[in-house]
Amino acid sequence: MASSRFVPFVDLSQQHRPLHLDLMAAITSVAERGDYILGKSVVEFEQAFANYCGVHYGVGVGSGTDALTLGLQACGVGPGDQVILPVNTFVATLIGVLQVGATPVFVDCDLETGLIDLAAAERAITSRTRAIIPVHLYGQMVSPQALTSLADTHNVIIFEDAAQAHGAEREGVKAGSVGLASAFSFYPSKNLGAMGDGGMVVTQQDVISQTVRSLRNYGSTRKYYHTDPGGTNSRLDTLQAAVLQIKLSHLNAWNCDRNRLAQRYDEALKPLAGFGLLPMVNHSGRGHAYHLYVIRLTSDCPIDRTRLQQELAACDIQSGIHYPVPCHLQPAFQNLDYQVGDFPVAEQLSQEILSLPMYPGMTDEQLEYVVEIIMAVAENCPVLI
Image 1 (cartoon, rainbow, N blue to C red):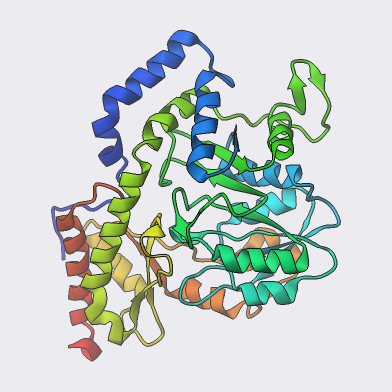
Image 2 (cartoon, helix red, strand yellow; image 1 turned 90 degrees about the vertical axis):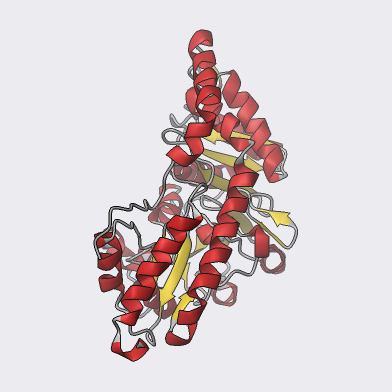
């Protein structure tokens, strides 16, 4: 199945090429001002992104992981506290909890969406539970109504991990505006990505924003005067903020394109649904930001995932698995004393899921080519002939 066509997993050039002059002008402006650390563009982008999320305050930091760590610190989460989080997430969510000295308490996920199982989360709440981290996975939010009800009932903090959910909405609520605070990542491949690393904590609470501002800058609110011993060096670069400010005005259009592509994938792959090839379920309609487009090759599906990936790669189509090893089975965290079988849904999904190419500017022809190869692999399965 060799082909001269190429479909990358993500193609940032499709975003950057039309914005080249604006991006270069923004970068040049920073260079001319020379305000590379906590400069004018940082202040402007922090407010613009906070407004976009529907909250009052945004504080730029060095990465999405730092946004999780410093945000949790600012919310008063620390040693002695338990924090509930889904086991089906990128390891940064776990690292943020560990870095503040809290105890992570994993719970399983929903089979159809991959999102945290809130019923399991409620069963995991104890007198030591301080916070719950809903991970808005693949670009789809956890239900704000269900989250708020659970948090209010049990008096726990909601701290959103919105690293994959820039611009996502559900039940009329935007990602980043549900919890006491929220963490975003601006890793280049995100829906809103920098030309390097970056992150932000957004919140409605002035005291939390001020605490993060201090923590990100050596625990200092003014130069050479340090009041917080938990401070570090984690500041969003002014150059990255300038880039992000230009790209923010295009985010809604890019998300609409992602949603359109997802609908085309859904329709094109329908013939394989009866054979166990299923897209992850969308409960958010057009509010799904589709950072990733993920399918499941269920136990009923005769198509082998490894073979499908190999065939796609042979045809110059990139794909991924998000994520092949759940957090509780990662070698670095065996001291948490979880075992194989503790979270059967997440473990099942790790063996079934496959992420297909998804990015703004991906053409219909590219998408049709991806589907064509999947169908060709299916046709070679005796059960599907």
